[in-house]
Image (cartoon, rainbow, N blue to C red; front, top):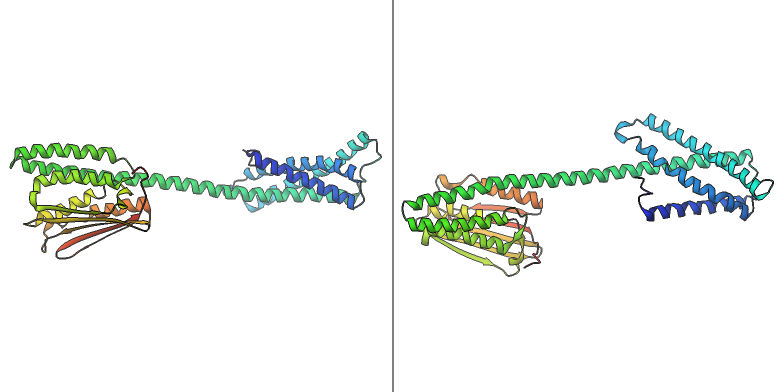
Length: 355
């Protein structure tokens, strides 16, 4: 739709501008002693309205020449031809309207249409239409840029969602396979514990399904998921597995992507606690500072790790998830020493208003 006609306010501004142009034409005719104010206003205002209507057609001329399918010579030819037609139309209307006023007002002539004045009217019609063509061309160019930006943003959003789904599909089976292996190991040792662990695992996956499709959940929901997971692992490792959570009150209301802590606890158990004869304590520290949420997970490791050191797939998946959600704003880093493994995450703090 025409950009002027599609917006009432824009249309009123456009008509007002052309009416003011008509007043300006009348003022010039009076200043040149070509007509008095009454005749000048009656002559120029209808011409100005016609000029606004005629000039608005320049939008459709520009739309008929897409930027990717035009050449400079073709555009120049069409713009010049359209402006020429506009100038001739404007001049013809001036002559015709002048004759109508002569008959209607019983005057000899409202204006003396000299050759000099005729050339001036023609040039005015030509120049105004050419300027309108250039203005609409610029408008269409910027509109195309905005539309391209909107399409690009939509494509980025779809790509991000697709990437998150792929990452989740890589992570979710990882939870299930490790848990089933734990239950399988317990069935030969303690059937009652295996049954208890199966029930706890069902509760864990029930909560997982409830939050997995959400883009953001509260930190409290994530911590409850971790508690259910640790309840399962506690049955297997007993006193070998110790946990310390230090979470500030401000951080509890933060919004975070789902299932970012639970995989880290699983890695800490698999690559750290499991390889230590006496086990150890996994420490989780979460606090909010300024506009950032800081999360740190620390666990002891064996000084001589074997094949269970991992390939970093889970940590790289976490880094990719953060990049898909936050771009360059989030940071994930980790380091290993002979005695411990420390992972640190920093992401923008988003407050959960429902907490």
